[in-house]
Amino acid sequence: MAQTNYYIGGTTNSAGESEINLRLYVSRDIRLRIGSGIWIDRKRWGKKNDINIPLIQGEEREQLLEKRTRLKALTDLLEHEINTAPDKSAITRAYLQSLVKRFHKPTKAKKAHEKSFFDVIDIYLAAHKLSENRLKNFRVLVRCLHRFELYRKATAGRGFTLSFTSLTPDILRQIEEFLLSEPEIFLQYPEIYEQYPYSAKVAVKTPKRKRPPRLDAEGNEVPKGMPLPRGQNTVSDMLTRFRAFFLWAIDNGYTTNNPFKHFTIGEIVYGTPIYISNEERNQLFEADLSDNKELETQRDIFVFQCLIGCRVSDLYKMTRRNMIDGAIEYIPRKTKEDRPITVRVPLNETARRLIAKYRDPDRESLFPFNTEQDYNRKIKEAFRRAGLDRMVTVLDQQTRQEIQRPLYEVASSHMARRTFIGNIYKKVKDPNLVGALSGHKEGSRAFARYRTIDDDLKKEMIGFLD
Image (tube, rainbow, N blue to C red):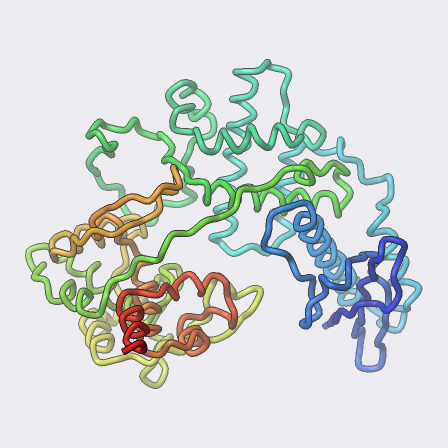
């Protein structure tokens, strides 16, 4: 298998930039060095031989993100050529350099008009090995783009078609506004949602059950099929996925238009992580829910998740085979493709008792899981019945304003992960040690959100003044 390392060249061009060079390991005897044709400011080249992306939004950040994407696409192309070559001795420096040249200047055979915009999206999805969850999220975006096209035709003329040439920074702003306003648009143009529904289930994993109608904040019944409100974080994440597709399309010769070059995606903002204390977790665990066995089961699953700190997607994949020598071992799905590491979490007595309680020789999974949506509903109900109703301050993702809500209303499966991380960090105060149990990489910005300084830590620090 081919392997590629990067290093920065010693010379600079007229813009003061240096070329990123590639060191390719073709075989045990063949190692070649070539230029990538991608140039950056040396100060943006990190110690780990990667492009450092600034946190501040702006044109420089957009350009560096584009260059990082192009570098990865080039590397994938070269490694594919090497890995599929029947004769490795035919791989020469001149041959690889010609591939780099064609990469930056595709042949005219690739014409954007040969395939429709959505055809190219299908090619992109087929060419990328995305996880099941990422693929599902991208297909949500595709349905949104289909609906936007119909909405634009209904409001601005039938002649509009979503294409590489029609996409401009102004159209991107309209798409952003559309994603934020879908509940209102649904009420105005319900026929759009008949053609491209808000939700499209691939398979029915559980029998259909009659559920009570969904109600809004005023207690009114929400029409069936109406989209849920989206926050700016969600919309920014969707647009980031869209940008990744566009950069890929440019790299592969489907277009030369980049509307994201002069469009800034909104910053993703997180509030202070809310988690429960060990005492509150025990209060939840000891609450008498025997009158509702299904609620009791989902409560027990939540408590177990609090004790191992995994994401709900990893929890639902766990079987008895994940239990090894008194611990749970798993590879987090979210980082499996980029950084496959094994996380090992020793089981305490409570966790072992919960596994034993729900052991079933006819079932592979550790617990009798419901759908994630039902799991989250049951968690909120269990919190309410356990009396976990203290008021907490959270960030409203629609308004970006702070609001106060009872704890049981904001409880969810991810609170279990925050509870695991937050309570251990209070005792250990070492992010790297806690990260080894949670699966976060060293220096992770995501992990930093969990390390909020709570009142106990503040009091301890103030005590140093006595």
